[in-house]
Length: 49
Image (cartoon, rainbow, N blue to C red; front, side):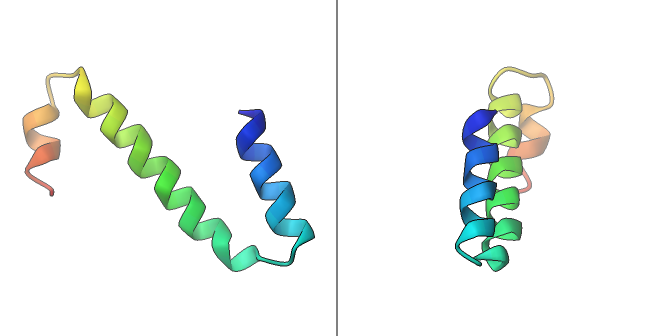
C-alpha cells in the first residue's frame, strides 16, 4: 500500500495529476484479474474481455 501512496505523492509533486485516473484504472484492473483467478465468477469476468 505504501507504493501506491508514494506513487500518488510523486505524481502530485511532479504536477502529473492527469495520470491519477490512469493509475487508478490500472490498479482496479489488476485487482479484477486477481479476483478472477480464484473465484467461481471467472467465466463471467472473462466474457467481458
